[in-house]
Image (cartoon, rainbow, N blue to C red; front, side, top):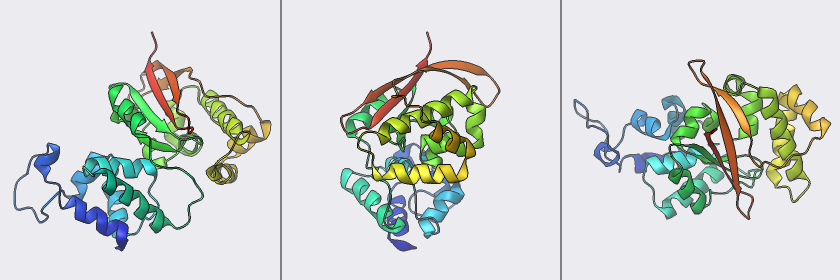
Length: 249
C-alpha cells in the first residue's frame, strides 16, 4: 500500500459520515469511517483514481488533489503538511517547485464563492480550486496544471469558445516567467507539452509574451450554453496567483 495509502486509509477511517453532512445509509457499514466512494465524491475525484492512490498504484497526485483530499478528510495543518510530504516521497524527486497554497489565498478562494476561482503558482500549477471553479473547467483539478489542461484535455476546447486565444495567452505567460527567475518546474512543463502538443511547440517558438492580468472570455457549459466571464488576477509576492472568473457586467 505504501505510506501515502496507509495515511489516507487511516484518516478516512476517522471521519464519520455525519461529520461531513452525509447520511449513514442503510445496512451495516464495513468501515468505521467514510467509504472510498464517499471520500472521492467529497474531494471531487473519481472512485477509481482515489482507489489507485490508496492502494499505491498511483503515486503522483497533484497539489490540488492533495488539497481537496485534505479538506474532505478535515486534516489539521500538521496533517496537511504530512500528506504533501508523503506524496513527494512516493513520487520520488520532483521537477516542480510547487508548494502548498498560501493560507490567505485559500481564504479568499472560499470568500469569493459562488464565483469560480483558482490558486495557481507561477507556471499555472493548480494548487487549489473551489467547487464552482471545478465545475467551470471540468477536469482541471485532476490535470494539475492549467496550461496542461488547455493543451491536452479535449474538454478545454469545448469549455473555451475561443480556445486559440486562451492557448496563446497561456504560452505567452510562461514566456514571461522564463524571463524572470524561472522555477525548475517550467523546463519540465515546456518539455512535456512540446513533446505532446504541436500547437504548444509552435506557440512557444513564436515567443509572444504577456503578463496575466485578467481578460474577458466566452465559456461553454455542458448543455451547450455560452456565457461571458471576466477574470481578475491577484498575485502574491511569491508568485502564487488567485484567478477569479466573475460574471461580466
